[in-house]
Length: 95
Image 1 (cartoon, one colour):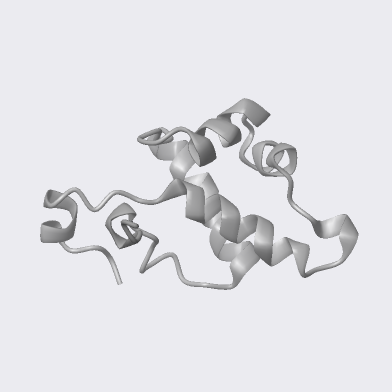
Image 2 (cartoon, rainbow, N blue to C red):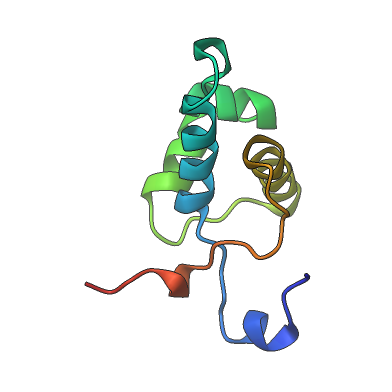
């Protein structure tokens, strides 16, 4: 399901930290050769390791459109989940 316009208009941004953590968790359960570190995620997306670190650790950091599609494709592939619904920042508990 594609996000609706009201979701986007209300600032329903993707929670990139959770997307990256999902990729890492899903591959930790696989064979040791399949584990995805920041370096492996960066390599799969054609980016640098610092790019992944920033997305995961710096609030408000967002990838460019093409990079986001690559990362979401990797997330869908490694987790076996559909690309929608995605993690949204407003879903985090405030406490």
